[in-house]
Image (cartoon, rainbow, N blue to C red):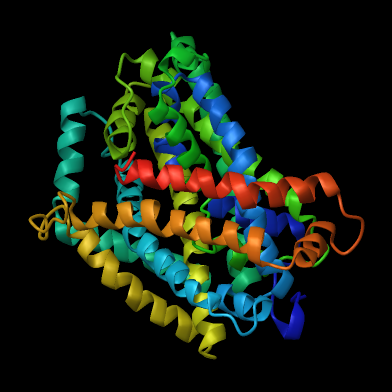
Amino acid sequence: MEVKRKKGRLGFATRVGAVAAAVGSAVGLGNIWRFPYEAGQNGGGAFIIVYVLCVIALGIPVMLSEFVIGRSTHKNMMGALKQLSPGSKVYAFSYVAVLGAIVTLGFYCVVCGWVIDYLFQALLGNMQGHTPQEYTEIFNGFVGNGWMCLLWTFVFLVVNFWVMSHGVQKGIERVSSIMMPGLFVLLLVFCVNSLLLPGSWKGVEFLLSPDFSKLTWKGVVDAMGQAFMSLTLGISGMVTYSSYFKDDSPLAKDAVTIATLDSLVAILAGVVIFPAVFSFGMQPEAGPKLVFEILPSIFQQMTGGYIWAVLFFVLLLFASLTSTISLSEIPIAFISEEFKVSRMKAINILAVLTLLFAVPSALSFNVLGDITVGGMNIFDLLNYASSNFFMLLGGLFTAVYVGWMLDKRVIADQLSNRNHLNKAVFNYTVLSLRYVAPVCVLIIFLYYVGLI
């Protein structure tokens, strides 16, 4: 049975499905290739402690601000702002959020294309029998082949938009409800395997042992940035998803659940990666090098390396797809509702807009490699703009809007489900949105752009 919200608008059928979709939005490749390395290089457990505090003080309140906007109106970002602030021009910010989602999707789907190619190569057995140097050459050769990058980017987008074409319940909710449990199962299987490797405890110590002497100012800011960006805040993804939530969903509990599961994925990824890295005498690296060069070299040395390589890239594919699904739904909901077109037409429009960014991103390591802005190629520029402009600006706007401009009765209604209000949760949310979140976001922004 199709579950509908206000005025016949479809929504998530179950709370479990809604949370699975939101967790899928938050969990992405950054949890697997960025968080473990950042933790290991910035004091291990010390970084994780600061990260958890930042999730509590910054991430959860900003997520709740997006939940309040979306669930109170059951509309996309623009429709929600028009309803909540009639006669105001604040709705214009929704254009920035939608553009941010498209830009992020444009470069992110290129990396997802790399994941599909590596999964395909792993299935063929081509990830076995190479030296570490050869894995580097394989990766460089692949990203240097413009046609192959375009092919796999296009394949991934076809899969992504095929899921979106099935709608909120039969597409987003169903896929998320399958892939997120699958992702956790795969992570746990990998954790057990990694911890059974000889010398694995050195990797666990590298990741989890608190060493505050290694926790620099940069590490603190990185923890704040990771807490914010890991939850995919600032580009109205949680506004869009929460607009599909049921009216009786406990928003505060859902936000805590989503943030906890997202953080758990990041920590488990570290437990998977670093025991294996140390067991085989490799050096921990950040970014694509870790996933596409270091880990394939490790898998081939393991017993059953073929299976581990295949399963790992299946895991990455799950994380990739659940993230791009949420990114896609932001402009799809906006286009279909604000321009009164069918969902399929909105998907087709988004496909064209995405390719405008995805094609030059895929070619930025080869054909368009000579085109740079500020020393960054097109891919890196879009990545930088997404993380350091769109997400941060969007998070700042959302925090200030809900904290200072929105009628506090709306916040109270949503946090209490129009029942008994937990004043401690209400006060904590408003206090953070008014003071803590804006200051933290400004610090992150000024640091990343080099002004402090």
